[in-house]
Length: 435
Image (cartoon, rainbow, N blue to C red; front, side, top):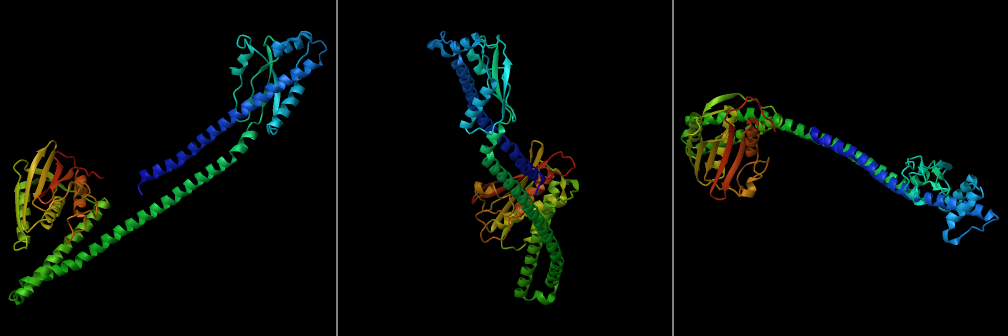
């Protein structure tokens, strides 16, 4: 498991905590707003009821007018010298809260001196800009004026608003905690599982590499014995025996090629490739490729023709060993996926700051849809049924070209041709570029 994915998973899990906090904060603020409106209404009612109680205790109510009840009551109370009774307001307010099932709230009543430049009418108090902001442990109501000139007022301060809000959040907090716990536990199990998978995968790669490497020694011995049999006069006189020896030799070489591919793919996966760059004469290099093909397929079941035109770009800076392996893989594919007569053409082209080597054959080809996935490991075309292969050759070529700092692409027409395009940097720095 790569570190970027681990970091992304951890960041995602940690981001869940502020997200849940934001959700809880939004719900808390909504409940606090509802609580404030309820408490504010209870307090305003308590102040009005206390004023009415004082009013009914007065003996002179001749100035009372039903057209302006509150202002007339306030004027009469002021003229009579009556002042608000905070204890009465407190008792009525407590009773009002109890009716709303808010008896757990603690509060105190405060008197204020108001700025008449701000509060010019009683309605100004409904949007009091000086009202103290609510906090987790404090919630203040609007100031209710108790004098006709609006210079004095009373307000209620709730000292424990959370006592009425948190019970409504209990289930939300509980399930949020469960979700966070589940996500963190799932993340922990996922990281552990992926680490185990990575360990097992690396172990499998190392075991495969060691096993294939050990197979090469007895395989080389069999190939040497097969060569000795071909040169032994005792077997030359029997055509059937010679045919069997040829098949034995061909199969040993084929098995040896598979072993080399698996070992090289393991080297690529483990970043153990070491390149030795040199300036390569492309014409000379492809003459060697042609000679090798003529030696391997002198009387093969398939007629193989190979030609190379390196007139446009004659030189290339690359690792000769791995360049040979790339060509061996591509030419092997051209021969396998073609008819009895194989025509392979190689040419060099200059394209921008890249030198392209194009390998074209008259093979069976494949669709554009198939070409998009052929460079993936273990992927093969739809028309490869009955043809030996494991889908690692083109992936190996792709990985090597990435290490070279170049590119590889395929142009193909099903049933007509296949052309593989290899792009090598024309002027490259001597460094390995990894995936």
